[in-house]
Image 1: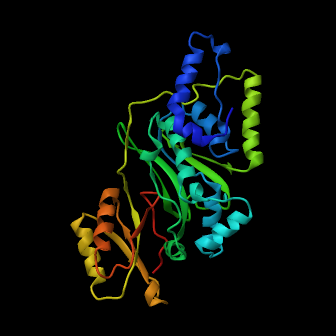
Image 2: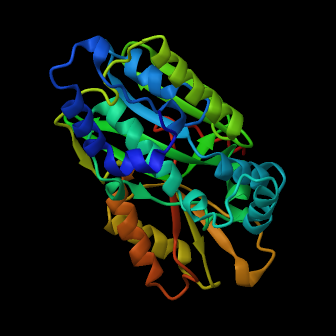
Image 3: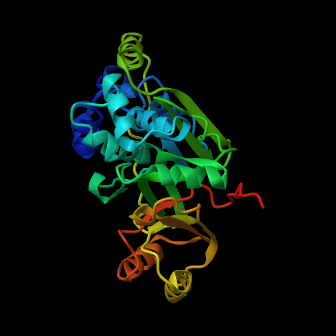
Length: 340
């Protein structure tokens, strides 16, 4: 029984091979079992659910708030108007952030968990480094101002979804989430995972994803289950031939910091047209500091590779003051909360 997600994410095939070797020729009641409920989302029974509750179903998408530290910080930035530095300081004081918070704020902790969940949900065996990972370090107060203008908020999510037959994509990134989304109201250090499937449609698991008691609770449950000879299905579910792909389609949010010049909107339109990106809307709050002015573009549904090309082109223009920040909008059928 373990709660070590980093070990499992890095060595899952090796662990699986060891289990196959030691159990070869044994009857089911004598087999060695491997339990790791506490490794992902602490006290939420997401591992057991994915092992047992979707056997006759097909999962098409998973999206989750799977890191408590960053969700606590983003809640503070959104609800309390704190800066990134202020939110990190408070998370450190309360023990949510480690002395070196890189694994949390960089998204790497969430990526390890997502890699494990992907194997359970899709049977995909993927190197952790192949999963696109962007943390929360580049988010600013401005992003939350625009998110509120749109009628939603920003969450760091781990997302894995089937994009076509035999192809699955996955990423860890801040995402714009509308106010009526089930994940938008999951605040502070709470975790949540939504599983979308053909039969159950939408199932959301929510609870304490970290901390000594939720983690210990899952570990003890695993130990007791073994003592009762409560046998689990295959620990990682059967593998599949599905392929991991890095490109995916989404609506995107782009934040552009600029130096005031003529023709900015026109040039943005030309760059987007060049790369086949259709603009849904352009937002700009009143400028209070000319040296810190930014506006936002919301695109229509488009491929990630096209967005990267747009960002690269815009960053080469004279008026662009820093790298363009982009993030996906979680739902394809999102509706803006903008009012006239």
